[in-house]
Each structure stands twice: as C-alpha cells, then as structure tokens.
Length: 152
Image 1 (cartoon, rainbow, N blue to C red):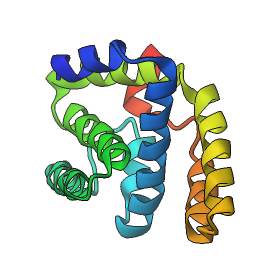
Image 2: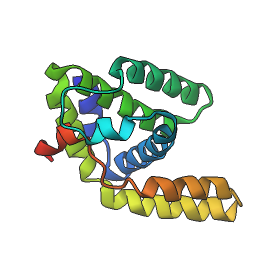
Image 3: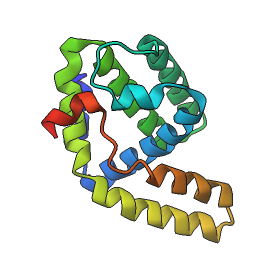
C-alpha cells in the first residue's frame, strides 16, 4: 500500500486528476451494479452490508480486464477503488486510505476540467453514451469515503 501511495505522491496533479476522473466513471457504474456500495462509501460504521473482500476481488478482476484491453486510465481508476476497499477492510491500512484520498482530494478542480475536455472529444466523435457516463460521474466529484474524510 505504501508503494501505491508513493506512486500517487510522485504524480503530477493533472495525471492524478485523470486517474481520479476515471475512478469516478468506474464508481458511477459500480453503483448501478452493487447495491449497498454508496452506503459503504458514505458510512463511518464498522459493520457493512457488503463483503469488502468481494469488492477487492471484483475490482482487481475489472482492472485486469481494462489492462488486457489496453485501457490504462480505467485500469488505474479501478485500482484506486481496489486500494480503497483494501484500506477499508483492514484497519491497519486506514492511514494509507486517508493519505491516498488526501492527495487525490487536491485534484478535484482538475477533474472537472478533464471531464469537460473528455466530453468535448466524445461529443465530436459522436460517442454520446460516453458523454452520458461522464455526466453521471460528474455527480460524484468531491466523493471521499467517509472513513477517510478526517484527514482531508
């Protein structure tokens, strides 16, 4: 986990914003597929309705699929959630989750800019389904897992 955090800390803000933007695209789609995910992210409770181990496995598999398809940005965004779920699952990793989201929180202004550029490119290429997904993901700009907010 420390290696992942170190990698994030060494990234440029625009690069981190792209990863965060794609994590929001992934998150908006995961919310449709996994009942209770929003409650997990918004909760400061220890008890969860979801099996976090399953989320770790699912996001790891999804990231591998993106990598296989040469979709590095969505793979990176999915891995952000994979690491987040790991930090939620293991209390000893909470400090890493807090630091990860502290670093990423600073990039939210750039996420909006990136989404605007991406929407423009998708509109020009007539990829309207992607424009719709971006519009959905924009609703989650500013999301930070509740358990990690105290450090942000």
